[in-house]
Image (cartoon, rainbow, N blue to C red; front, side, top):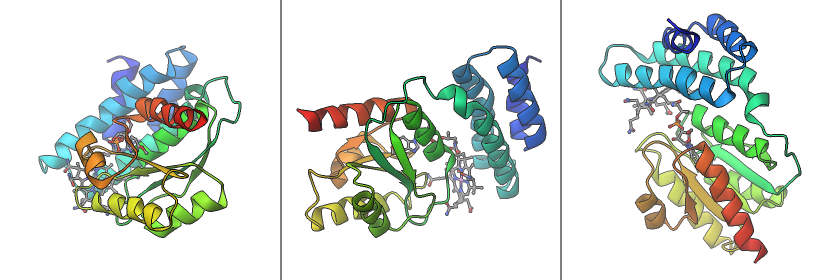
Length: 214
Ligand code: B1M
C-alpha cells in the first residue's frame, strides 16, 4: 500500500505516532501538503465518519482518530501556510456552543493564517457573546463560526442575532461553515457568508474584506 493509503489506514485506527511518522515521511518524499491532507488524513477521516454512522466503530475510536488527525495537521501546518504573511485583517474563529468538533475549524484557521490573516481561535463550545466580545477586543471585522451537528447549527443564528442586537451589523460580518451547514441555512439565519470548505473559507474572507474596502 502506498504512503497515503497507510496514513489513511493508521488514522482510521487512531495510531497517532504512526500517523506522525508517515506524514513526516510523506513530507520528506516531497508530496504536496494538500495531497497528504486530502488523500491521506481526510480520506481516513471520511472512512471513520462512515463507519461511525454505520455503528461499526464507536465514540472512543473516533476520538483516537481525531487525535491522530491533529498529530498529522501539526506537522502539515507550516506547509499549508503560504509564503505571503502580510497581515491582512483579523478573523475570530470558533466552534459554536454545545459543539466539540474542532478539526474542520482548525483547518480553516490554518488556511486563513497561511493566507496572511490573523486568526483568534476561541476553540470549541463557544458562547455567542464571547464571539462578539472577542471581535470587539481584537478589532476584528469577521467572525467565523463552525458547527458539525444539526443540533448546534441554531447557535450560529444566535451569534448573528447578537451582532445585530449590539448594533454591529456592517462593522462585524459573520461567516458560517461545517458539514451540515448550507448556503440556504446561512441565508435563513442572516449570516453574511457561507463557505463549504477551508479553501473556500479563505476566498470568502478575502471577498468580505474586499467588499469593506470598496
Ligand atoms: Co462527531 N458527529 N459526534 N465526533 N463526528 C459527526 C459530525 C457525525 C456526522 C457522525 C455521523 O453520525 N456520521 C454526527 C453528526 C450528525 C448530525 O448532527 N448531522 C456526529 C455525532 C452524532 C457526534 C456525537 C453527538 C456522538 C455522540 O456523542 N453520540 C458527539 C457530539 C459531541 C459534541 O460536539 N457535543 C460527537 C463527538 C465526536 C468526537 C468528539 C468523538 C469527534 C470530534 C473530535 C474533534 O473534533 N476533536 C467526532 C468526529 C471526529 C466526527 C466525524 C467522524 C469527523 C468530523 C471531522 O473532523 N471531519 C464526523 C463525521 C463526518 O463528518 N464525516 C462526526 C474532518 C473535518 C476536516 O471536516 O469538520 O466537516 P469538517 O470541516 C470541513 C468543512 O465542514 C468546512 O471546512 C472543513 C475543511 O474542509 N468547515 C468550515 C468546517 N467548519 C467551517 C467553518 C467555516 C467554513 C468552513 O467558516 C467559519
